Structures are given as structure tokens and as C-alpha cells.
Image 1 (cartoon, helix red, strand yellow):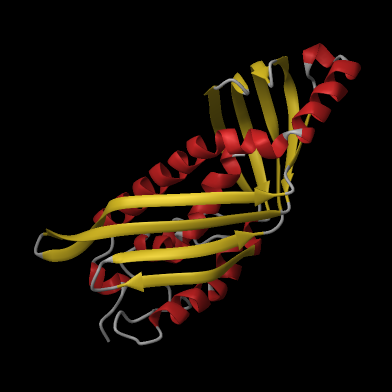
Image 2 (cartoon, helix red, strand yellow):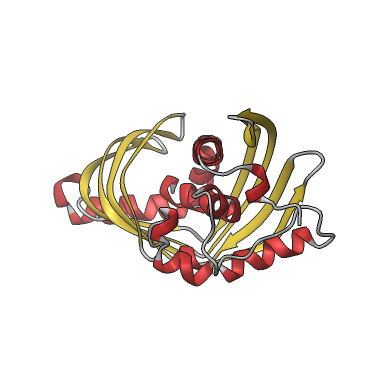
Length: 252
């Protein structure tokens, strides 16, 4: 789940990330002017325009292909009553990120804040896992392959930024970042639980999927914190190191 959300975040900040990756944009990337009365509409359309390039990757901007997108390693650790486990996911392959759809991308230029909403449908993950602990008070232990699918992911993201100068040039950096996420129809399957015991493996997978929505709600605060951290790390580094504000959102 965490890997999904991290990537969903990337799309929640997609257009700004594209701008933040280099001093100059490729000619095929759209530019949205900061004082355009239809700025927000331009930003939403821009996310559609860049889709085929993002799917294949944009080397000149340092953007890898997103179909599929591979996450080398993810660590999960929970200590709640419902979820008390440690898990390590490796070589997680995410498919479906190119299915993103923005319904809103608002940039308040005077207030230096933006807000966006996006959906991604569907998403599939495949990878290796190792887990130990308890889920719903039942023990869980094993390692092997896992698959996960989500029919509908919804994300909202808000960020407040501020101006700062570097060598006399104006850049922006984040002040506050907040994100929320919801998912529909998640399904998970783990192979190799309990040393390959087929009966225990089947029962445990059934318990997980029968309660997957409740389990996700327990993980949600952790996931949203992860998204927020990723947003700030990606945007802060990209915007501070590479792109002046005038190139992010040209005046004319």
C-alpha cells in the first residue's frame, strides 16, 4: 500500500515536478503563465499533455519511465492493536500509474499555494516481501511474492510555498504540505506464508482481504505522512536546486 501512495503523490505534484527537474523545459512540454485567467485549466490540461512522455520517461529531466515503475525497497512497521508487524518489500513493480486523471489543479499565485485532486485507476503491484508480527491479533510470518490491486485511488494535495533568493534569483520552497488519500476495492495476496503451509496461507489471505478496508484506515495516517515527506523532499530539492520561479510559471 505504501508504495502505491508514494507514487500517487508523485502524480499529485506531477506538473510541478516536471518543471522542477531542469532549468529549461523540452519544447514539447506545455508552459502555463502565472497571470493567465485560465491558469488552473492550463495546469490540468498540461498533465494530460505530458502523459505519453512520462510513461516512456524523460531523460533530459531526470524522470524515469512510469510504466512500469520499480521501487527497490519499502519498509513498513506498525504497532497498533489491529496491526502489529514489520514488513520489508523489495523490487516492487507498480503498473497503472499512467492512468492518472486530474480533476483539479489550482495555483493561487498571490498566496503562493496550490491544491490538486487526482485519481489513478487501476493500479497493480508485484514484488517480494518478508513479514513478521500480527494482523487482527492473528500471527503472520513468511516471505515470498506478493500482489496487490486497487481499483480506484484518490489523492488530494495542498502546499504553501515561499520565495527565497539564490545568487539574486528568486526561487520557491515549501512551507506547509498536507495530503489525504482514499482507495477503493483493494485486494492483496501473499504467497509463502508460514513456510508455504497452503492452508494457513489461504486462511491468512482471506482474513486480510475480508478486513482490508479497516486495515488500510489504520495505515492511512502513516501513509499520508509518507506522502507529505516525499512531496517536500522532491519539490524542495528540485525547486531550490534547479528552477527559478520565473521559469516555473512565466509571467508572459
